[in-house]
Amino acid sequence: MKAPCTFGFLLAAVLLLPIPGNTGTITTPGIVAKTTAAALSCMRWMPIGMCFWLRCSWSGCRVRTSIKVGHYNPDLVVSSYNELGGNPWVEIRATLGLAQKTAATGLLGALLPVPIDSAGNRTEGSANKRDHKNLVFREADAIGHPLSSLSGIAAGVGMLCQSQTASFFPYFMSGLDALSWRQEVPEIFYPASLLPGLREIGTWPLQTWGSVHPRTGWTTQAEEPKAAAINAQRAGDIVTRAGQPHVYVSLSSASYMHNDIISLIDNWVDDGLGGMTNQWFPSFSGQRVWPPGPLVEKDRSTGTWQMLVPRTETSCNVFGNNDLASLTGWGGGRVDSAGDYAWNLWRPYQCCRRRGQWFLFDIDWFSYPP
Image (cartoon, rainbow, N blue to C red):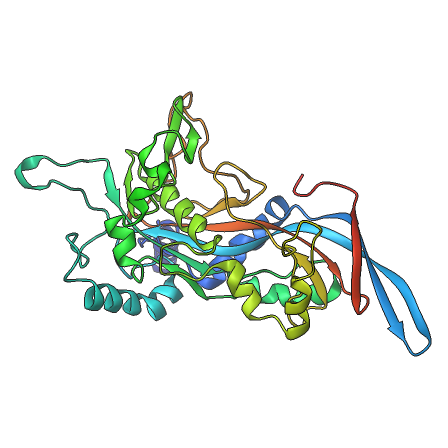
């Protein structure tokens, strides 16, 4: 009679034990769940104005209106990790990890002084015990968020804006950009790479995590989570701009590739300043969208970060917080034993539902992002 009781006690004890495993991994369902949990805090949805449309039919023309809304979309999952092809996002590692290794080893392996078949968390000067312990190298990827494509479906109701990104699409993978990400060419020639205080993630010279430039995998940072955050900021900086000297796909150009002819023509309507309006009609969405501009460090109006790995966060913030007065610092509680990190990048959009053949104008009640 005691055996069942003893077995039950042992089973309960086993179930309560911590399960060993790699904390530096995340799956697609996990990303969706963590994103949903942070939606109320990070999305910041609000009605911000009105759009006016001209709708014409056989019976004549009339002006119709629609509500203009603003909110943040989880556009990208940006990862910073050690091993080439070892993205902490399990499905991406399984499908695209080998492609990164093949590209880096096959095309550029013979040209790179840094061994690309070893862990990315490397230091220079290992010979003669002259290591630079805070000089760290990491890979980085920026992949379309699993919920991005669903935003196009939700856009049909007019209360959510379609994202510029496509789910699971690799906008940036450092393994494919191996030469620039490792050799710092031509990044090293940017003024911000040469002059301290330009493009700093923090407040220079009082406190700074590091510089956005040069946008490479090398960082000089004693705290591992901050080094990973710097790499994530650099990857986000690259993909949200066009014409950068890297192997990547720009978010702005990617969104226009999917537009139909009417959308493309409308995008070239003069905005009164002699340039193209920063607006687009996503195909089949039935709405007009004002997408976000380039990501800028410390500026939450251009994008905010939600940590997924190793510590799940249900709020969004920017990198570069002043943690000098903190006992543990920003990195306290965020160190991953595997050296792998991942964030959601949330970016602000504005949009209104299409209610006519021609867009006339819009009126904003509030400035967005606030």
